[in-house]
Length: 433
Image (cartoon, rainbow, N blue to C red; front, side, top):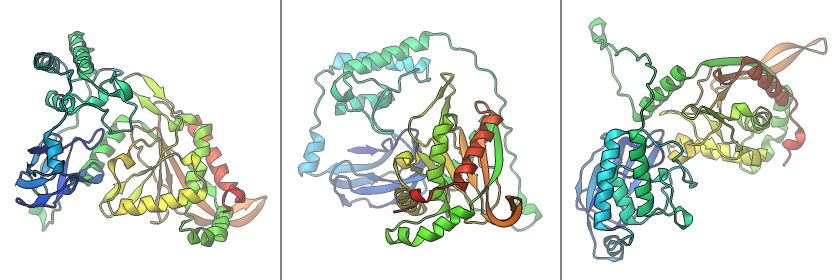
């Protein structure tokens, strides 16, 4: 059987082979890792779909591959796993004539339009999870290039049957007949000039990794499509650091690390509730602001491979100890490149703390499609006037970058005022364990 690269998650349609674990002639078992793929900002193992012998490997380390591309061939065993794979159930609703008719209609529709249908992202399943459907339905959808997560399943549990595929294809065909609005021309970037730097002296080159190319693409997209403005301020964290010193050992005994980032997670979620626009996203297609009732906060992690932003989910439902435990565990897995693609999706706000490196104020770039990001620098001792007396206080540099299309400067100022106050008035009761 030919094995092709499966879809790894929403938006993950390509990657680079970072490792091949088997050789031609090797015997593998169902779900055994065959190769490793570096995609987006994650590394994922690709499993064997059934037991058997690897008869051909079509890719090697460093190859760029896409979803649906042939990656290896498998000669199935006569064992239980292979038998199961060879006897896939057939959807009784799929007939040869009906299937041929659907193929013709889908090809015509696809030739006329490549745009997604509005309002068709209907699955209630987690991101990247394909709705239930028979193997024959999945096979037909793959052949037609249909993303099943965009098809409404009419059967129990959202199961997709032939009638659902036909309805979706007919909608594609109908959409292709409608006149399309004229797009407003957008200036394109000039083609980069190739420069021979070696003519001025000795040089050394290093090929960009998939991760670095991804970071580059995302940063350019965010910077060029979102009008960034950054609001700066400082928070007096002298009292907060005293609390940290007082309770750090107790947290460590429970494997928790009481860092400033953990405090920031606890603080920020309350401010986001008070200023929900900063936890929202702009749906540019629908012309709507999407307000989120969840608080999934991305944490920028500095790794030897580049900046990676995993997401801590439901921050509002976790106390400081839970946050400190999860933050440490997630950061460690991120540095080891062991986070999945799904763990880096769905964030509603991002925090980037450069304090450990020694940076002060900086202007973080928004993690699109989010609306804002908080940058934290290194706290430093400064002379500050408190109650008409000059005192030494530790001041934390803060920078809030926001999407000026939707968020006004006054909104950002109010957010920052409340954020500073929250840092400066952190309650000891929220630290006790």
